[in-house]
Length: 323
Ligand code: NAP
Image (tube, rainbow, N blue to C red; front, side, top):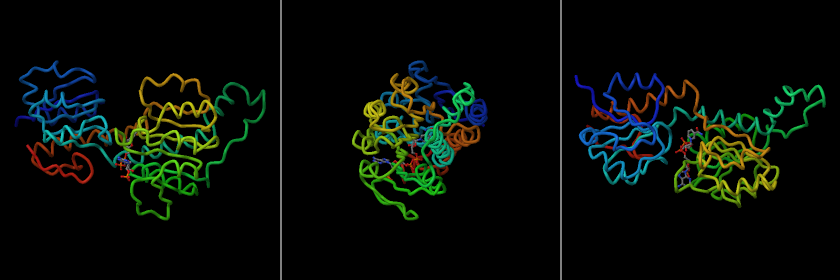
C-alpha cells in the first residue's frame, strides 16, 4: 500500500522520525527553511503536515494548496495563524493533556528552587562558603502561602493541585469562574496579584493574551512577590518585569519562557533575583515520546478518514474533513 506523503517541519528525535517513516513518506522542511526549497509538484501534493516550527503564516499555507491538516507538536496554537487556516479549510491540531503534569512539575520545582534559593545554596557549598562563612542565609517559606494562577486551564489546574498539596491558599484568574474546591476566582490579574505571594502564569500564548500580566499586576505583586512563568514570554510585559526586578518593585521571578527566546533580553543575565530555564517544562523523555505520538496518530486518523484524537482548530472544534 502506498504510504501517504507528509511534510515534516522542524527537527524530531529518532523515535519520532522512525514512527513517521513507518507510516508516511516524509518530506523534511528544516526549521526556518522557505517552502520554495520544495518543488512546485511536491508542494501541490502535500495534504498533511507535522509541524514543529515557530511560524506558519498565510503565505506558507498558500504555498501548500492541497494542505488539509497541520498537526502541531506542542500545546497551543500561537505559532500558527489559525484564522488563516480556518479560512482555507485547514485543520490545526495540537498535543494537549499529555504534557500538563510535566509542565506543572517544573513550575512547582522552579517556585521552590527560587523561593529557597536552591541554586545559590548549592554554590554556597561548592564554592566553599559554607566552611568559610557558615550557614546559608535564611529563606522565605513556601508551604502555606498564597498562590495566584493566571489561567486555570489544563496546566494551571495541575499547578494549583500541586500547590494545594503544599497547603497553599489558591486563587486563580480567568475569564469565567471554574468548578474548584473553593479556590478564589478573579477576572482582574492585578487585583489577584495584590493578594498573593506567588503569581504563576499558565495562559495560552498568542496576540489575545499578550501582556495580560502587565506593569500594574507586576507591581501589585510587590517586593516580596514572585512570578513564575511557564506559559509563553508574550503573556507578561517583559520590559516592565525586568524593570521591576531591577528596582526591587518585584521580588523575584522564575522563568521558563521569554519573548525573544532563545536570545534573551541581556538584562536578564545580570539579575540576581531570577531563575532562568531554557523552555524545558515539557522536556522529559516520557512526555516528549507521548507528544510525538499524537501528531502521528492525528495524521494517520485524518488520512484514514477517522475522527481526530484531539479536536482541531481550538477547543470544541471537531474538524469534519478527512482525506
Ligand atoms: P488550556 O487548557 O487551553 O488553558 C489555556 C488558559 O489560557 C486558560 O486558562 C484560558 O483561560 C487562558 N486563555 C486562553 N485564551 C485567553 C484569552 N484570550 N484571554 C484570557 N485568557 C485566555 O492550555 P494548557 O494546556 O493549560 O496550556 C497552557 C499554555 O502553556 C499553552 O498554550 C502553552 O503556551 C504553554 N505551555 C508551555 C510549555 C513549556 O514548555 N513551558 C509546555 C506546554 C505548554 P479561560 O479559562 O479564561 O478560558
